[in-house]
Image (cartoon, rainbow, N blue to C red; front, side, top):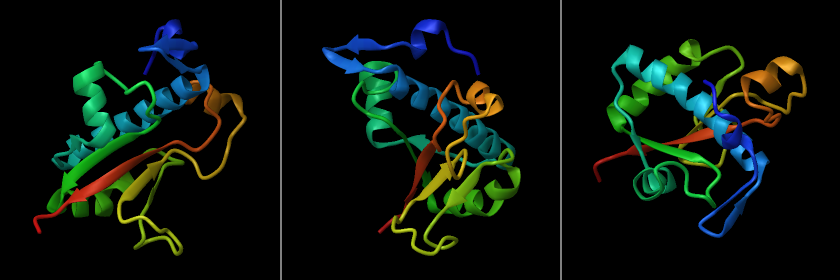
Length: 145
């Protein structure tokens, strides 16, 4: 995925200062979203933007300026299928974390991460737009209660 130079530069939007580091995190998260989308497309899994991601898409045409993550939601059937298929289909270095597969994980949603620890090598910098830290996307399940 490529971004124009201004996407990764400091910016003031709606009176809110957005530093380049947050924009690098956004770019890294969009790379993860691309990988999630490929898994979902290959497995016929439906997902939706949720929370601030949905609000940002509708109200801001992108990220909410003061938000720093991407939130997705899947219906239970699709969520379970994603958790079963994604670990083997995501690119190398990506991981899926849930309370079911990771002791001490305290959330009730899944997180797809691009790394387990910071990377300062050129390959990682180039791949994730200069963002050295693990980036992740939250995936929530939509159950009918």
